[in-house]
Image: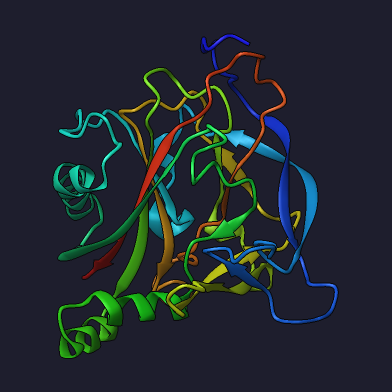
Length: 286
């Protein structure tokens, strides 16, 4: 198989997404973040549905964090980080860029605390690959947990939790050419119902830390999008949680964006595998 990258697919498409199916035994759903020997990564099932996924290319500015819980940013400057292979270098060079991006893009943002990043590569030996399961990175409970964990003091955590706080995932590809395989799909928060969202314990067996993510049940009312041929100078802001989401009179639809990598049936053989980095941050204010 060649390693060239054919022209990426463009336009709307029907593709399969993997949604949540409850555990057969009726138990509470969980993920294992660091797998012990001979244990499956989660205890719940998969319900695969073919859904329409619309191409956001050409109408990028029509989506906002408050309405859709995602935002598309074009023409971003080159990063001081080039290789994206060393965590310390990423934290030194890329984190400040992400912090400034959020402060300048999110209206009213006054403080940003970056708490982790994940790099995904298609190589089977890579510890993280594109996730082909519809999910949300954090829930309201885990967002509060993150604030208490990463704020400089308990007093500041309490003050931050009393005001508007969000978790935003800054997502970008690392490929040198436009992404041609495993693009990212994301659903407008305004079309995601509360009943579609299933809190899932995210267990770290080595440390005993338990966070919370969300699995997503399929609903035909959900409106799905992707950005065709995404390039390294483009970013997607994925809002995992917004404390103002759904509040009466706030004008914020929901503040949670379901997302998943997907296999585009139009992807040509030999397409270069997608590489990406996502940086998760607490964003405070106004």
